Length: 276
Image (cartoon, rainbow, N blue to C red; front, side):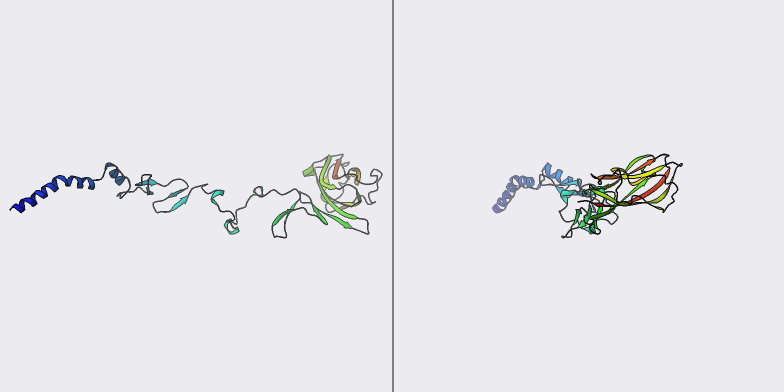
C-alpha cells in the first residue's frame, strides 16, 4: 500500500509541475498562428498566387509581379519591355531569330556615306565602300562610266542627267545633280526625249556646265516626240565661250526659257575627257 501512494504522489507532482511546460511547448505563439493562417500549410490560396518565404523565414501567400506573372494554370508570362539589351547575351541573336517579315527600317541601320555602296570585304563582312575604277555612282543612284582611255587621249567618261518639267519646274535654271570634274573637255553630247515638251512656240531648252551652251545651245524642242535623240556639242567642246575647258567642278544645268512647259522630260548624255 505504501508503494501505491508513492507512485500516486509522483504522478501528481508530474501533472502539477511538468504539464504546463509541455503545454507551452506544444501551443503555437500568436505569430506562428498568423503565419500558419496566412500561408504555411494554408488550406486556401487565391487564384494565381504563390507561396514565398518572407524576410523572417516564414511562408506567405503572394501575387507574382514585376517582369513576370503566373496564371492559376502555372503558365508564366514575361511582361512587355521586360527584356532589354542588358538581358540579352552578346552574339546570341541569330538570323533565324529574326522574323522574315520584320521589315526593319533603313533608318535603324548604320549610317552609310553619301554615294557609297555596301560591298563584301575580303573577310566576307559587309562594308561601306566608295565605287572606283571605271564607274562612279551618285547618291541619287546615277551611274557614270569614267576613266576609259581612247587612242591615248586620256580618261574618257560618260555623264548622264535628267531634266523633268514635273519634277524640276518650267522656266528657270535647274541643277541636275551631276558633276563634271575640273579640267573636263566635252567631246560629244546628246539628249533623249523621254516625254515630249508641251508649251507655246518659243519655249527653249539649253544645257550647260560652267559655260553657257557648251552642252546644248538654247533651242525650241517641242517638235520632238518621245524617243527622239538630238545631238548637242560635237566639236570637242571648243566653243567661243569655253576657252581652254572646264576650269572647276561644275553641275550640269538645264535652262528653260521662253514659254513655260507644262510637261516634258529629257535625259542628257555627255561624253567628256579629263585633262591631267
